[in-house]
Amino acid sequence: MTKKAGDGGDKPQSCLTGSPFELKPIDFQSHSDLCVGFRTDSFVCSFGTAQAFLGSDNQGGDRYVRWLQGKSQERPGSCAHLWHGSRIIGQMELGIIHDSSPCGYVYLIYLIPECRQRGLGTQLLQGAESLFRTWGASRARLRVSPTNTPAIALYKKNGWYQTGAEPDADHLLTMEKRL
Ligand SMILES: CC(C)(COP(=O)(O)OP(=O)(O)OC[C@H]1O[C@@H](n2cnc3c(N)ncnc32)[C@H](O)[C@@H]1OP(=O)(O)O)[C@@H](O)C(=O)NCCC(=O)NCCS
Image 1: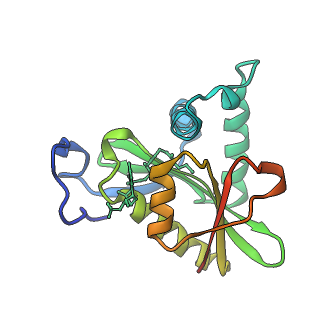
Image 2: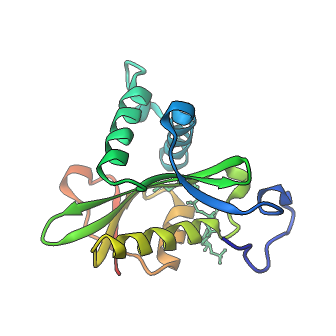
């Protein structure tokens, strides 16, 4: 990954300078807690609270890690951490769903706060779209909270468009892209 032209402004540079970026499959032995932390924050970014994720029994994190491990095993490389040198700065969770034809599915794109608005989300999304093509998908889909302005802006800017809401999640926007 390369630095986005024009980056800088008043943000600390530590996020992007020096080391290379690398996507590596999630190491669940070492980084399950980090996955839960990232997912929790993505709920806060999306809904203002992570209560629906954590659940009334507070076991949502464990349920999520089991789900994520299953997804990883189904399709190696589909659930990855974004490393910058020796530091994990993001996470991507992808899959394929099958309705009329294989369709790429973005479950999560996540960057730590200091690494946002530097073009990395765009690079992760474009990487996801390339992977979907190699997995035989000719279109891709995701769901996003209608109040998650940065995420919606990212998707629209990259050619994703809104479709009708899905019946099991009519509080979310469904977006798609032809690949
Ligand atoms: C959503 C997310 C991945 C975007 O990543 P990012 O690296 O900040 O996105 P980019 O820098 O590539 O921005 C792409 C475009 O999105 C828009 N955008 C990004 N952040 C924005 C913000 N805070 N406000 C308004 N627009 C924003 C801009 O149009 C931007 O293009 P530009 O810089 O050329 O104007 C990041 O904000 C994030 O990790 N959020 C928390 C997790 C999350 O909500 N994930 C999505 C769940 S569905």
